Length: 158
Length: 158
Image 1 (tube, one colour):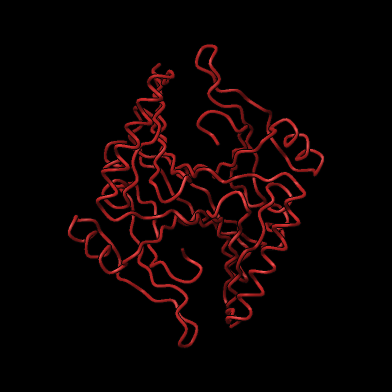
Image 2 (cartoon, one colour):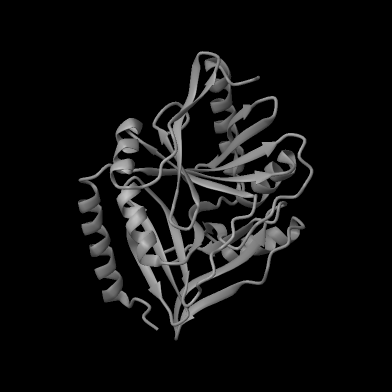
């Protein structure tokens, strides 16, 4: 099991920055949003607001569909919710796409808050390499069944 | 068709900031990555490096699986690639998850560069409300068939 130790992590970071310098020579693309399709926009908006403090930053409303871009002050990356009006059939999830991850300051408090809100959150788990903690997290699902990973701010996950 | 005009957009932004102030009172979660599963990590790494200047910032390697976190200097949001070692069966995509979007400085140049790299990119399209340009973009797919939207930096998409 080759989980990076501190030196390897430093090496990885240096390698990362070297790669940054290299790719700077080519055109760079900025990741700005991930898009998922939802059945009930209000239901999803309530969920993402209550669970993660994400709110509508822009909405585009058309006869057949609507797009809502959710953001909070923590990042300018957005979650784009697409509502196809009139659709009643649940979307399917396949086996490829995994989840969007967020990090929080106090995982235990957030886990308790989700439960108090009546939101189904799985148990908190730890991902360790021997004694070294890599990640502490729980998974939950949004109203359409998309998985969301909630991570304690730690190590790489900040 | 109620696409925001400038005043509505300003209103939306003010509403957005008001929402920001409100959600600041609750715990905030920072979106830090989206995870997709890939069949051939090197193939995917080459694709994301060549197409979008995204490179490995951290890699976690385990006996059964590996995780690669891709980043570039444009954003600290990461694309997490999960490799389940030994898997040969292609992942399925379902109907729910849409895409990750990136924005670039020069869409025409990037479109031509993708073609020169031998990457399949759909035609450039415009998304308009009457005469007003909302977005100019093209779609492409990564080696596992995940859709990626490439947008000209413009308006909301910056």
